[in-house]
Amino acid sequence: MNKAIEIEVLSPEVLTTVQDAGRFGYLADGITESGAMDQEAYRFANELVGNRDGEAELECTMKGPALRFLGSATAALAGADMDARLDGRPVKTGEAFWVESGQVLELHMAGKGLRTYLAVAGGIAVPKVLGSRSTNLKCRMGGFSGRALLAGDVLPVGAAKETPQGFVRPYHPVFSDHLVIHCIPGPQEEAFTEAGIETFYGSTYTMTSESDRMGMRLAGPVIETRHGSDIISDGIVFGSVQVPKSGLPILLLADHQTAGGYAKIATVISRDLPLLAQAVPGTKLTFERVSIEEMQETPKAQKAAEKQDRRAKKPEALPRPLHELRGWQRFRTFRERRKKW
Amino acid sequence: MAEETVRICPEGDRALLVDFGNVIEEKTNRKVARLAGLLRERTLSGVRELMPAFSSLLVLYDPALTTYRVLKEEVEALLPKLSQDAKEGEKTRRIHHIPCCYGGALGEDLPSMEELTGLTAEEIIRIHAKEAYRIYMLGFLPGFVYLGGLDSRIQAPRLATPRTKIPAGSVGIGGAQTGVYPIASPGGWRLIGRTPVRLYDPDRKEPILCRAGEYLRFEPVTEEEYRAIEKDVEQGTYREEVTGE
Image (cartoon, rainbow over all chains, first blue to last red):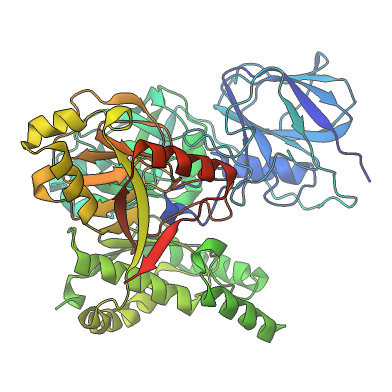
């Protein structure tokens, strides 16, 4: 069994945070999901080093950090190519590599794309907060002391599994300066005029530099509303396209607010979210309408679902936070569990 | 009639929105809470999370395990039950009693509230602390409660220039809303007091104190009492008062 090791941050650069698959089950409490912005690249990096699903990694933004490994380990980079060097020698993004104790891994500016994920066998082992190791910057929660990494931080790495998971699914990142993003209309499309809806799907928008893990502000033609875009606050998801008073869309991303009071003209489909995660300011975006039926009811979609279904476990109860079960309910749940045993 | 106004639509390919109408109304909010309860009891395959809001329920699901169509049918089958239940109403109200020290350094906008409302500080406190406010939803910040039913006499516009940092526990009024800042945050509400109780504490076994559908009442305390409770909270010996009515 590999010994647990540590990683020292020599220079964090723009924004390096600890992220995992996300913090689920707390939207109703006002706590957003966070997690890796590019879930595909994140998933791939974990698979390359043989980690289980959901192990924490480092998310590096625009210009990656310099890190010293205190102990040897298998590591992998996925996502944007940041011209990584291990003690000065080039390291390929998208392949696992071995790091000797004391070696320095240095990342540079991303050539194409914006975010790179560093996975280490065993995973970044910061303590879990509410079931996740993801950093929620706004709430200063999770990750490394609830904040972005700083020089001098020393990150714990978990013990690597003796038999690493050998299954690596393919990953083909797309970096483009003009993205076609697919959206399912609504939930408040009716707040906009026909001309406004036409504007949204018929125009080209540009990603502005006012973009971060919470959201991406777009520049372009103003979307016309029927009677303004104020609504009574309701739930937001990763991918919601909100149109505030300005009439310019904001794409809400991993650190989105849990609820908002502006109408949402559409929602980006989950398959296209990694494209948004890798977009840089100046990227052009056009939106294409797709229906939920096309996504889930076509023969191809059904076949994919059936395949998944065979692998799926039997239905589980909702992951319900314990604190929600009060008194007798807790007892009942316990009794129900016993019955199942 | 109730069922006809319910709108079910997709929110992307991983969530479904049940919209009971664009209103802030206790009756509607109760339906949201009831539907959330029924869906939890059903433990449907693939349902990941429920997010109740003022007048809508967001159902997040795993598209590998279920589909929009399947869940829409499930929700539609539950709707008739909601209007039956709505007639009966809620049997008990769970009320959180939140100690609040009004005015002084802990509620620095109380003097400006006197000017805006034409009421004395004592009257404002009496009116604010009288009501058991319904918690319509949580959002914005961890443990941030959206409360309904603020008396119109003490409603006041937000500050023209929001403060860049408001301490955790601050109790404020913004327009027709009142509430508590669970963590330090920027904000534009007028601060009338502060509570030593933590509505959100990640180190506590139950990090979030209140839930949607419950009630909250402010109990005026002196600054001395505030400090004493604050100490108890820090030492983990404070026991929150919750009653059922």
